[in-house]
Image (cartoon, rainbow, N blue to C red; front, side, top):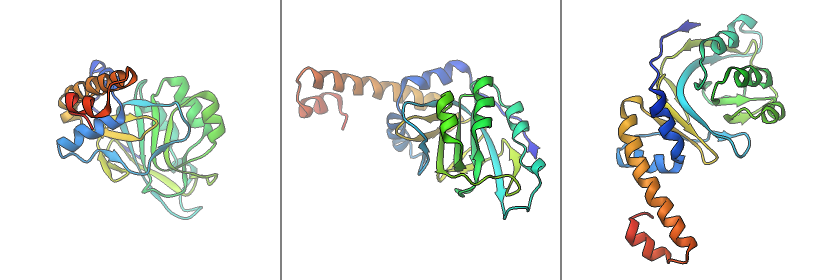
Length: 222
C-alpha cells in the first residue's frame, strides 16, 4: 500500500465544527455550490458522531482468494492514524466488509475519532458495545480478507458521491455525513456558526410559543 503524507487542520478549527449540525453545514455548502453531503452513508446506531480530519483509504475488490491477507493491511492504517482522525474508506459502495469489531476496538483505544465507509462493516454489536462511531453504506458478515486490497493511503477518494481529500474535515452525526474541503473550512465554519445561532433562536422562541411564521421572518431560516 502506498502511504502519502497528510496535512491536518488546526485542532481549534476542528473543535469549532463540534458546535454545528450536519444539516447546518449542508445548507452552507449549498450556498457555496459545494457538493459535500455523502449520500447513503449512515450511522450504525444512534447517538454517535465523528468530527475530524480525513485519513483516506482507497481500496480495490475482487473475488475471494484474489488477494493475500497482507493486502488487507489494516494494521498499517491504524498505526498511521492519530487521535482525533476520521478514517474514510472508499470501497466503491460494495457489500464487502472493510471494518470489524477488532478494528473498532483498536481505533477506540488509540483515540481515533471514527470510521466512515463507502462499502460495508461487520461485527456491529461489538462496535456498538464499545461505543466506537462507525458510519457505513452497508452492514454484512462477509469478510474483506482476500477480497479487498488496500491500495493507497491519503489519496483522493469518493465517499457517497463526494470527493474527499486527506485533511478535509468530516462531520458525521445522526443525520448524515458531510465533507468540508480543507481550503474552505474557515469560511464554512463562520457561516455555519451564524446559521446555527439563528436556528437555536428559532427553536427557543418556538418553545416559548412564538409562531413559526414570525420566527421565519425574523431569522430568515426555513
